[in-house]
Every structure is written in C-alpha cells, then in structure tokens.
Length: 222
Ligand SMILES: Cc1cc2nc3c(=O)[nH]c(=O)nc-3n(C[C@H](O)[C@H](O)[C@H](O)COP(=O)(O)O)c2cc1C
Image (tube, rainbow, N blue to C red; front, top):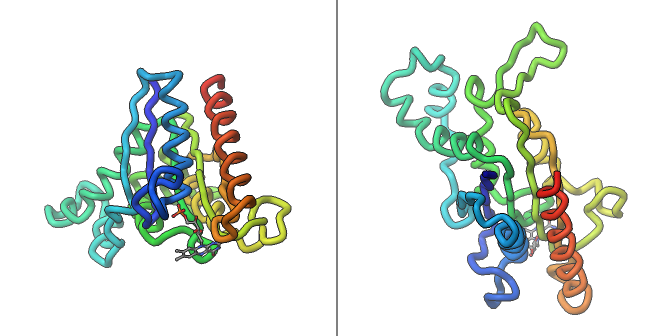
C-alpha cells in the first residue's frame, strides 16, 4: 500500500471549478488525489489543510528545545516540539507528498514556510556533520519518497526557461529544504494566468489537469 500525504496551503478555502473564487492549487491537488485513488483505491491518504490551520511559527523556545539532545530535554521542551513531532511523523509514514500551493510574492504562503520550519529539524530529519564535505546528512532517506508540487500563480513564465524564471522562489524554496531531508524527487505542475482570467487561464487549467493525469500514471507505473 502507498501512503499519500496531501497538503493544501492556499488561504482560499474552496476549489476553483467548484466554488466561486476557489483556489486553483486546491483544485489541482484534489484532482491528483482523486485520479490516484481512482486506480488505487486501497492507498491511504493523510490530509492536512495548512492554509486553514497554519502550523505554529518557530519560536526561541522551539529552537532551544530542538537543539537540546533528545535525552536531555525537559518536559516543557517535549511539549514545545509535539507539533513538529506530529508533522514529521506524517512525512515518515508517507511515500508521496502532494502539495497544493499558490505563489505569494514569488515564494510560498507563510503557513507552508511554518510547516517547513517545523519539519526541518536537526537530529530528527537531518544532521549536520562538519567533518563531511557536504555537512548535511538527510535522515529521511531510508526509503524513497516523491514530492508533487501543484502550484498556481497569477502571472506566467516562472518555469525553467521562462521569462520570469529568475523570480521563482516558490519551487526552489520548497525543493531545497526537502532535499536536505532526503526527498530529492520533485515533480511540478502549475496553473498560470490566474490573474489574466479568460482563455489564457482556461487553457492553462486544462493543460495542468491533463499533466496531473499523466503524472499520476507515470508515478503509479514507476
Ligand atoms: C498575497 C498574494 C501574493 C501573490 N503574489 C503573486 C506573485 O508573486 N506572482 C504571481 O504570479 N501571482 C501572485 N499572486 C496570485 C496568486 O498566485 C494566484 O491568484 C493563485 O491562483 C493563488 O493560488 P490559489 O488559487 O490556490 O488560491 C498572489 C496572490 C496573493 C493573494
């Protein structure tokens, strides 16, 4: 059985195509999971709506607790790290991370950044060994996990070779910290032109939904 961890990060609650002013990234991630389940109904889906319930922002107490070796932690430190523990456990049990996420100011919404700050934790998901040429040691590489980024943006041209590619801080902003943990296989599908509306948006949605279908087939066959 394969386990999917499905995250949505849009601040908009509904899905486009279903709800007025609904989220395009939620529509894509929902489409991915529905297409996946259509052919593999036995697989498990764990869902977390980060946009609706943002993870806590990392604090000074969090950092003190995280950098204290586990066997020396005081009870309050375990309490402070409990949310991080739960978020990390969800990644540990997952085979595929499906992340629906909009572009906000060329990067990711703050709730997804909080999620990343909670799951990238020294001694828990990565280690740092300065005796190594690359001092970062991934701790979630014990099995291969794949990440699917399903994004939406108002403009266009942020993809590789695009006219605004240099402004895309969204994809690398997620892919780089996940690689630190050992999750190095990343697939992306984007809806563009959300702010252009009309035909440009309609065509982009249709193309993205088709690419999601193809990606589901590709990943299930792998
Ligand atoms: C706070 C905010 C910042 C945004 N920043 C950008 C941006 O930098 N570049 C862009 O192309 N679109 C930007 N947009 C447009 C969104 O990316 C677009 O509306 C997208 O569809 C939102 O995702 P959603 O449909 O899943 O809610 C921004 C929208 C908001 C609300």
